[in-house]
Structure formats: C-alpha cells, structure tokens
Amino acid sequence: MSHVNSHVTEKNKAFFKKLTPFVIRDKPVGSYMGNSEVITMAINVTGTRIVYSRTDKSIRIWKSTPDAAVDPKVIIDPHAKAVESISFNPRTEYLFATVGKDEYVRIWSAQTGEKIREIKCEFDTLKLVRYSQDGKLLVVVDRTSNILVLAVEMNYKVVHRFKVNEHVYDLQWFYHEHQFLLIAMHDGSVLLYEITEDEDEDEDEENGGKVFGTKLRSRVKGHNSSITSIAISPRGNYFCLGNSEGVVSFWTVDGTLLNLHVISDIDQSISHLDSSRDSAYVSVAYDADSNLRIYDYESGELVHEIPNSISGSQTFSSAVWFPTKTCYIFTSDHGTTVTLMKRSDTSRLEGGGRKRDGRRNA
Image (tube, rainbow, N blue to C red; front, side):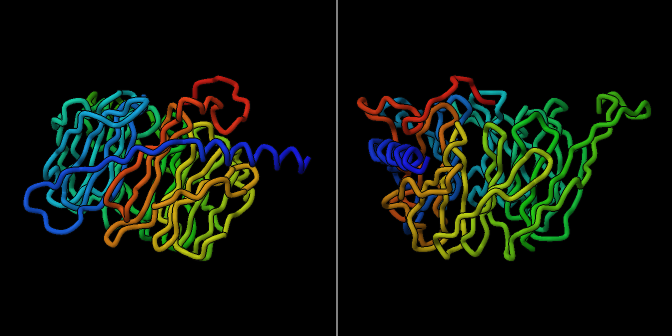
C-alpha cells in the first residue's frame, strides 16, 4: 500500500511541475507612489474572469483563456480605501461584490467593469463579504464583528444581524445552499452557525413572509491560537483551518466534526487556505518568508512548493484554485504580480494522474 501511495504522490508532484506560468503584470494607476501589491483575489464560477484588488485602491479584471490572461479592465477607487474582500455570485458568471473599509457593499460586472448596485450598510468599516453557495444570501462582516445577512432576491435587504464577541478573521459558507457557515475566531475556535428561515404571517410581503435568524450549532475547538483562514472542500467532504502558529488542521463534515490530521511544517502564521476543485489538494500561504505550498488532502504530504510566492511588504501571499480545472493563480514577485498556472499541451492527466468520476461539482 505504501508503494502505491508513493507512486501516486510522485505522479502528483510531476503534474504540478508540468504546469506552465503566465505572469500578469499591471500598469500603475494614477500618481500612486511605490509598489502596488495584490490584496485579495477571486475567480468566477466558469473560470473565465480573474479579479483582484491592489493597495493602489484599484480592482483589476482579466479575461482568463486556456493560454493566458487578456483584455484587462481597471476599476479606479471602487471604495474609499483599498478593497479587502471580493466575492463572486455563484448564480451568475460576471457579478461580484466588494467591501473596502467603508459602509458600502458594491456589486460590479466583471464583463464590463461597471458598478451595478450599491448597498449602504449601518456599519462603516466593512471588511469581509461572502455570497452563499446558492447565491441567495450575502453576508458582510465589519471590523468590530457585526455580521449582516442580506437577501439577494429581496434587493439586498438586510434580513438579519448578529454579533460575535471575538475578532473575526474569516467566514466561509458550506457548499450546500445557504444553511451553514463557519466563522474563524481570535480565541482559536470556529463557530458553526445555521441560518434559519421561519414562516411568519405577521411579516410583510417584502420579506416574503419569512423571519431570518441564526443558531449556533457547534464550536470547533482544537487550536491554541487564532484561526486565520478557513477552506471548505468543494465536494463537501472536509474543511480545514489555518492558525497563527502555522498549523493546518483537517476536519470531517458528517456531523461528528472530528479532526482527521494536521500539517505543521512551517512555523509561520497562515495567511490563506484554499481547496482545489476536486478537493484533492489544499494550498497554504504564509504571512512571512515562506513560499506557498500545495498538500495532498488525504495523506497530508507536500506535493509542490510554489516558487516566487513569498508575501509582500504590505500584503500577504495567497493562491486561488480554478473551479473548473486543477490549476490556480497566486501572488508572485512579493505580491506585485499575479501568476496564472496553466496546463501545458503535454499535461493531459487531470489532477495529477488520479482517476476522476467526471461529476461536476457545485
């Protein structure tokens, strides 16, 4: 069995070495002084658009093709300050939401670069925005851990609000409609919340006769330091947590919430985690002086270290997987560029030589 696992691991390593890079370089915006670094990145559900924000307060939109990234569009000053969070609506190809330390959630078209909608919220330091997996709800988090739930089909109306007592580092929806979400906390725990919808005859028709709420279903413990990033597998078979001590833990999602295994190769704070579209791999980014790493989910073995992916002086490194293929983008050149890793003509084995069932993932 160990021989078989070793053979699979070597195939996986060979697969990632065969990916070829395409470096995306942006032109400076206006009179911005110094190096502009990438803050956060996102890819749309069809894998045709790459969007990211920079410290020069711009948003960059690139069309992704099998061979390159082309036809760039620039949004200048989308918010009062630099954009900290981007989320694509999974029910659409082009619409994405942004927040940037002000009181606005803004919706944009990745096709044209135009602003589609603006929602003014009651809090003025919004830092996280996340569409649910069915695109029906949008959650927004501010600097003081106030959490707003907006109903997309009700013209982005705020239908519920709640607050947690610890600093929120990350928030992610489970890959099933809009029932559950995980919140990463400063105290080393993760809160599992359920979004509830109750019928109420007294509610006006504008709310669809429903009252939205939240229930704390579980508190996942096991880390001694702040949880800085969450990744949930697209196939829904696990989620993983990264903390400020460099530990990545893997957990079941079958109701037991059991710890499967941990990775602790690098003693640096985790800045970002992401799971590949087939859930086979997890990318791990670090705050300081280490390159991004890709691990095999099942074995926890390192399969690839991404060269030239150390964090910049202003921002942290990150990698984002395509939802349609086992390829990814990552911040490069100390955060000043974005590199698209694409399959070469000779790399025909999807996912490092593992057999796939061909099913399309949600």
